[in-house]
View 1 (cartoon, helix red, strand yellow):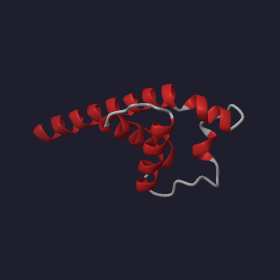
View 2: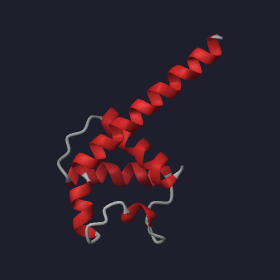
View 3: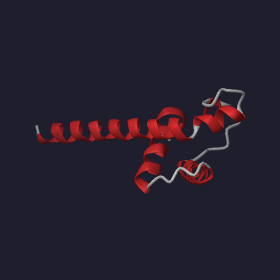
Length: 92
Protein backbone atom coordinates (compact mmCIF):
# COMPACT_ATOMS: atom_id res chain seq x y z
CA UNK A 1 0.00 0.00 0.00
CA UNK A 2 2.85 2.37 0.86
CA UNK A 3 4.46 1.89 -2.57
CA UNK A 4 1.12 2.58 -4.25
CA UNK A 5 0.73 5.85 -2.34
CA UNK A 6 4.26 6.92 -3.19
CA UNK A 7 3.65 6.11 -6.88
CA UNK A 8 0.37 8.01 -6.87
CA UNK A 9 2.02 11.02 -5.23
CA UNK A 10 4.87 11.01 -7.76
CA UNK A 11 2.38 10.84 -10.63
CA UNK A 12 0.45 13.79 -9.18
CA UNK A 13 3.64 15.83 -8.75
CA UNK A 14 4.76 14.95 -12.27
CA UNK A 15 1.39 16.04 -13.69
CA UNK A 16 1.62 19.34 -11.82
CA UNK A 17 5.16 19.96 -13.09
CA UNK A 18 4.08 19.29 -16.68
CA UNK A 19 1.06 21.58 -16.30
CA UNK A 20 3.25 24.36 -14.90
CA UNK A 21 5.75 23.84 -17.71
CA UNK A 22 3.01 24.15 -20.33
CA UNK A 23 1.68 27.35 -18.76
CA UNK A 24 5.15 28.91 -18.64
CA UNK A 25 5.96 27.76 -22.18
CA UNK A 26 2.72 29.03 -23.66
CA UNK A 27 2.98 32.40 -21.92
CA UNK A 28 6.62 33.03 -22.81
CA UNK A 29 7.49 31.06 -25.94
CA UNK A 30 4.55 30.76 -28.30
CA UNK A 31 4.56 34.33 -29.61
CA UNK A 32 8.20 34.16 -30.70
CA UNK A 33 7.86 30.65 -32.10
CA UNK A 34 4.77 31.69 -34.05
CA UNK A 35 6.69 34.55 -35.62
CA UNK A 36 9.41 32.13 -36.71
CA UNK A 37 7.09 29.49 -38.16
CA UNK A 38 4.26 31.28 -39.93
CA UNK A 39 1.97 31.08 -36.90
CA UNK A 40 2.62 27.36 -36.25
CA UNK A 41 4.64 27.63 -33.02
CA UNK A 42 4.74 23.95 -32.07
CA UNK A 43 6.05 22.98 -35.49
CA UNK A 44 9.53 23.86 -34.21
CA UNK A 45 9.39 20.70 -32.12
CA UNK A 46 7.80 18.35 -34.61
CA UNK A 47 9.70 19.20 -37.79
CA UNK A 48 11.93 16.45 -39.12
CA UNK A 49 15.06 18.61 -39.04
CA UNK A 50 14.71 19.83 -35.46
CA UNK A 51 18.03 20.57 -33.80
CA UNK A 52 17.31 19.15 -30.35
CA UNK A 53 18.58 15.56 -30.21
CA UNK A 54 19.35 15.11 -26.49
CA UNK A 55 17.92 16.10 -23.14
CA UNK A 56 21.04 18.18 -22.47
CA UNK A 57 20.55 20.05 -25.75
CA UNK A 58 16.93 20.73 -24.78
CA UNK A 59 18.02 22.13 -21.42
CA UNK A 60 20.56 24.38 -23.14
CA UNK A 61 18.00 25.61 -25.68
CA UNK A 62 15.38 26.36 -23.02
CA UNK A 63 17.96 28.27 -20.98
CA UNK A 64 18.94 30.33 -24.02
CA UNK A 65 15.35 31.01 -25.02
CA UNK A 66 14.44 32.00 -21.47
CA UNK A 67 17.20 34.61 -21.53
CA UNK A 68 16.16 35.84 -24.98
CA UNK A 69 12.52 36.08 -23.90
CA UNK A 70 13.50 37.76 -20.62
CA UNK A 71 11.40 35.12 -18.87
CA UNK A 72 13.11 35.42 -15.46
CA UNK A 73 12.29 31.81 -14.63
CA UNK A 74 13.64 30.16 -11.53
CA UNK A 75 15.66 26.96 -12.00
CA UNK A 76 12.57 24.96 -10.96
CA UNK A 77 10.44 26.74 -13.57
CA UNK A 78 13.04 26.13 -16.29
CA UNK A 79 13.10 22.48 -15.32
CA UNK A 80 9.30 22.35 -15.59
CA UNK A 81 9.43 23.77 -19.13
CA UNK A 82 12.16 21.29 -20.10
CA UNK A 83 10.13 18.40 -18.70
CA UNK A 84 6.99 19.60 -20.49
CA UNK A 85 8.79 19.82 -23.83
CA UNK A 86 10.55 16.52 -23.32
CA UNK A 87 7.39 14.64 -22.38
CA UNK A 88 5.17 16.31 -24.97
CA UNK A 89 7.37 16.57 -28.03
CA UNK A 90 10.82 15.00 -27.75
CA UNK A 91 10.21 11.95 -25.56
CA UNK A 92 13.67 11.81 -23.98
